[in-house]
Every structure is written in structure tokens, then in C-alpha cells.
Amino acid sequence: MAKPNIDFSKLTTTLTQTPKELLDQSELKFGKYFTDHMLCIKYTEENGWEAPEIKPYGPLAIDPAAFVLNYSVEAFEGTKAYRAADGTINLFRPEKNLQRLASSSQRIMLPEFDQEQFLECIKELVRVDQRFVPNDYGYSMYIRPNFIGTEPNLNLVYSREALLYVYLSPVGPYFPRTVKLYANATEARAWPGGVGSYKLGGNYAPALRPAMDVVNKGYDQILWLLGDDHYVTEVGTMNFFIFWINADGEKELVTAPLDGIILPGVTRDSLLALARQWSEFKVSERKITMPEVVKAVEEGRMLEAFGAGTACIVCSVSEVFYQDSNIAIPVDPTDPNAVYGPLTKRLRAELLDVQYAKTPSPWNVPI
Image 1: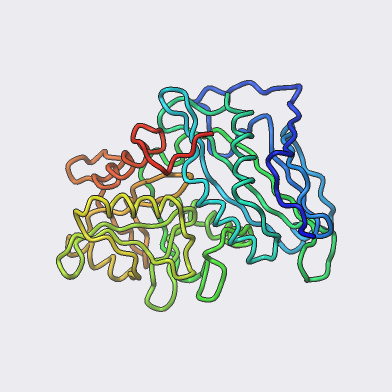
Image 2: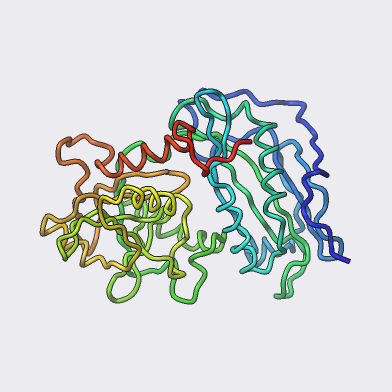
């Protein structure tokens, strides 16, 4: 007989007796403030998925020998809920995040789960804590699903017990300015045949030291380069885009391909779709190298560059440190104080208009 899968109809809710005070939106920092409740769904190989539970936000009870604590058996996701001007709340393309979570979790042998039923549970969690969803444009509710192996077992097999849980965090702008990147060609975040395309906790921890090193040098994040040709892959928490006049004289928006090295970002996919709808310039997913970037800057062909991700949405890059030199990237030649380049600004505005339901789109999922 088939083991039970996630079943939204069995969801139970226990409300907190000590609700938190709402912070002023100006005080919201990314990932620092959490709502009243969380969603937890337990799994065992013997009995399948247990009934989902929404309960007060608080610490988890995990055995010291759990797989997640010893072998980093953990996948996670990040999506957002947005409040429209009429007060309604939408999730932005959550099915894409759950597809990616399923792919990541299967890579580390965590159990399969019903994505549609899980999404219904997430929507209910957002409904329960909807008072935390900010009202202002540029603010949102970050949704963090986590999937961990919880079986206490030091044998290097697979975890026969797991926990899928979700918590919420109201957030403000991640980078309310341009960003400076440090191109790293001596260390690798991901490599061919590896797990760079999966959103696993184990991919992020080894990058903390080099990331903090560049922050201490005055840069925001690492631009990861790969191989002897210095293939431009992605930034620490963002996919990376370049808008230039390419070597053939064409205006082109280009980003790294989904070759197993980079994370298949939902914001990345959305921006590519928007740009292709315009049919105004070439849009490419292909390999480019840092020497090509430098040459384009030197020849005046670089128009702008930006990062894209769920946390930052879209942010312009104004500088890249590479081989002992700071390379200035154009933002907006008509405005030395610009935070966004013209294309970055347009893409960001169109994407936000969709996310805040100013522009009708099937990408929005009402709660």
C-alpha cells in the first residue's frame, strides 16, 4: 500500500498566545525578523508523511546524530509573497521554487513530496500570518522552505526520517544601491559534474569565508569565475547578467547557461522571459569569460551589468575587481547618482509591477 503523502486537508493550526509586535517597515532588514508561526511536516520511511501542522514559531527538537547536523543533508528555497494595492496577497511563481526544491532534495536522497499539496499548506501559513506582509512597494514577505534529514544515524546511507518546514520573514530592499563585486578565479563555488545547480546548504557554507574576505575588502559579493578561461558563472546570491554590444556589433543581454554550474534562478528565468517578449535586442544564455568583459569595457561596448535573485530582485553592478584592478561598469551615463541602469531599471519595474499585481500575470498565485 502506498505511504501517505502530504495532505492539505489534514492540516492543523495552533495559534500563538504571544503574538509579536509589527516592526515599522523602515526597520525591516533581510532575514532578521520572523513571524508568529511556522509550518512543519514530518516524514518517516515506515509511515510516510504525517499531517501538516502550523504552530507557533520556535526552536526545533533535533537529535544530535541527525543527518542534517552531521552530513549537511539539507535543501532549501526562497520565494516571496507580495501585497497588492487592493490588499490582496500573491505568491510569485511558487511552483518554480517547489520544483527546484524537489530537484535539490532528490539529489541528496530526501523523500518525494506532493508539491501542490505542500503549496496549499504554504498559502495557509501566509494567510495565518498575513498581518506581517508589508504594504509598501519594494517590501515583501520572504518565504523560506527547508527540507532536512532528521534520522539519527552516523552511517553514510540516506536519511529515513525527514522534516519539511517553512517560516516567514517580512523584508525590505536587499541592496538599495549599486553593488561592487570581487571576481574570484582562485576558488570555485561549483564545477562540472558537481551540485552547483541545486539549492543545498552544503553549497553555501564553504563560500562563507571567501565571501566575508571580500566584504572586509569593501566589496559586496563574489563574482565566481571558473577554469583557466575565467568563465563568468554567478554571484554569491544572484545570477549575473551583462548588457553590451557584443563582438558582432549586436546589442545583447547575456547570462550564463544552465549547464549544471549555476543555480536556475526563478528571477533569472522571469527576466529572460520579459526581455524576450520585447524583441528589442538579442537575449542569450551562453558562456562568456572575464577577459571578454574587460575587453568590452575597454572598447566602450559595455552598457550595464546587474545581479538578479529572489532576495535582491534586480540590482545594478557598478564595479568589479579583477586581477588587481577595479573595473568600472557603466550604470547610467546620464546620471552619475543613478542606482539602476536604464535596462536594469526597466526590467526591475516591469517585474515588480507583476509581483505587486499592477500588471496581470499568470505568474501570480493568490493565497
